[in-house]
Structures are given as structure tokens and as C-alpha cells.
Image 1 (cartoon, rainbow, N blue to C red):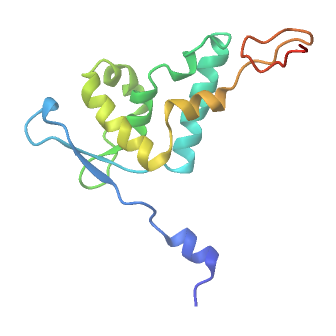
Image 2 (image 1 turned 180 degrees about the vertical axis):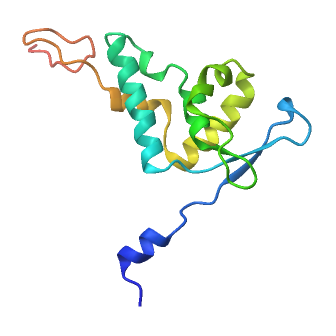
Length: 141
């Protein structure tokens, strides 16, 4: 009898989703696989680094998020990766409609929405005594 651990480690997870991309050529189908834990961690680390490098400028951690996620999740019909990490810039220059279509599937399978990335990045800690503009402070009136 298999233990729970063995069953979990042997599971294949969610099935990939075939996404037609006719804008990239006749019969082009990209297979989006759920991100592995390592791929998800890499995406989060990049987002954190981008945000940090910009001094946590709003939106900086989301730079090329769609392309970065698709690079990690896109496969051919045999399950081989289509892109390398070095392809992010080139992929980001492609038609946004196609990239968004693929990203939406990555998000659905792997929960990497822009909102989740923003929550991960958080906000830099304000010095004591600073008043936040978030509206979370309570009024004494």
C-alpha cells in the first residue's frame, strides 16, 4: 500500500492546457503546464528583485510578468520547454493578445496573478511616525 507521501510524490498534478496561437502561425499550439515549485519560486524571486532594484516603485515587480511566467510554463506537445529564461525580452515584444491569453492559463493553473505578485512584494516599511496614504490609519474624531 502506498503511503500518502508516496502518492503525493508520484502524482503528476494538473494536466497541461493546449492553447491555440494562430497569430504565431498556422497550427501553432502552446501547451501551458502548471508551474513547479521551483519555477514559481524563481518567478517570485525575480519580481522581488525587480521591485527592490527600483526602490519599490509601483509596478516594478510586475515588469514583463506575463512573459516571465509564460517562459516557465510553455511546452511543446511532447512536454519540452519552448523557451529559455533568456527569451523573456523577445517574448515580451510579441503580440500582447497572445501573451495575455497564455498568461491567463498560467495564472489559472499556478495562481500567479498580478494581484498575488503585488501582495508578495508588499510595501517597504515606513519609518515610525510616518502617516500612510493607504487610508488604514484611524481618525481620532
